[in-house]
Amino acid sequence: MAGLSNITLLEEPQAAFYAWIESSGKQWREKLRIGDLILVCDVGGGTSDFSLIQVSEENGELMLERIAVGEHLLVGGDNMDLALAYSVSKRISQKGRRLDSWQIRSLWHSCRRAKERILSDPPCDRFPVNILGRGTRLIGDTLKIDLLRSEVEQVIIEGFFPRCEITAKPIANQRVGIKELGLSYEADPAVSRHLACFLDRQAKESNLPNIPRTVLFNGGVMKAAPVRKQILETLSSWIDSSNSIAIREIETTDLDLAVARGAVYYGLAKRGEGIRIRGGLGRSYYIGVETSMPAVPGMPMPMKALCVAPFGMEEGSAADLIGREFVLVVGEPVKFDFFGSSSRHEDTVGTVVEDWEDEIEEITTIEATLEGEYGTTIPVSIEIKVTEVGTLEFWCVSSRDGRRWKLEFNVREKESFESS
Image (tube, rainbow, N blue to C red; front, side, top):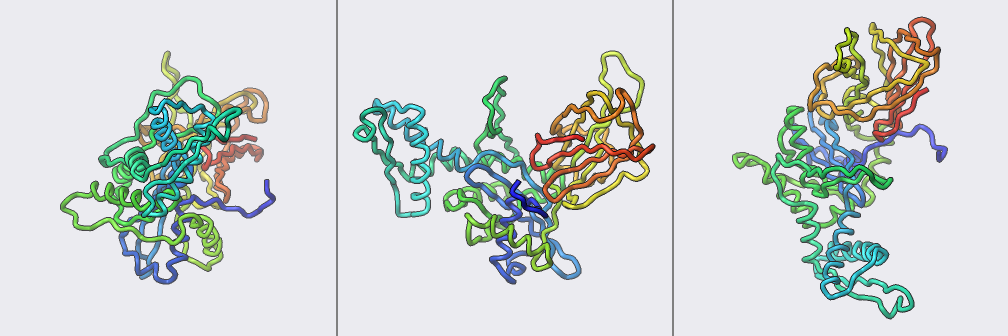
């Protein structure tokens, strides 16, 4: 929309790691070891993201490969500021003063400023927040109260980074049938439980070490030393006591601008002027294919999952399902089931999975009517392309006359799907 061309979308944790490479200069190789598994833990104002980067060797040179990407979690500094606002409002209510929703919102922003001051200035143990009154006494009825360092650390550390076991799972509340239109915020604000789930799943399903021993932090929340300390101690508690290798943090220079600086470095690396991290898609993608078999009363037709874009497939690359033919229904409403997996790293384009319990999850089901005569079935071959902006193009090509139909799925926004 901005008129930019040749765009490549890069996930923030990988950009943050590129920024670390750039800031380390030629010394980055001396700070890593072959076999290192690096956790990039990025907690910003609105989101939390995790990635794992593996250090290996090829032809005597260190190689970097992004081997796992977590979900894009909608929990971050905004949640923490709101939690602090509710904590302060609770103290206020105990004094017989009740705040309305407008004042809570004002307090939310004031708590953000106070939190940032307290966490960036260790000697500061309290910071004042002001809450305006309402009506004719807007100024005269202004309430002043201090946000305490102990309160900040308790709300943030215990509420968002509690100690837990490596087997912990995020708490899932029963979903309400009707919700306001808006973002899909996480039901469980405990970032540590989301991290445990991410690492435990990767260890079980990808034969990775249980716990990465090297951590790179990013995001404004990680400016707070108590938060970084809590995460490192939690990771250490997940290590087998017989293992003597300690968790270590690799320092970064700018938690606010790392993503922007890393994106620039990535652009230079694509021109051969920097170190590339092997990456590609952060999960494998599949489309549902109905099985050809006799119908059975009361039993839905079995569905197979056809891998159309494997884990690690590079943006800008394409693939064809050579020697495979499928049947496409055109001219009438049909549905397309899209699936994804963050654990099946060995599947290739064309792999058919019949039993995928707990390994492949449904992403979305879309109804569409493809151009053609009503109810016609057409034998087609399949072509796949992953674009630089993160869309997966799924082309069905008629084996009879070369006509083409396109299904387009945005792998970075699960709900986005188009057909033509």
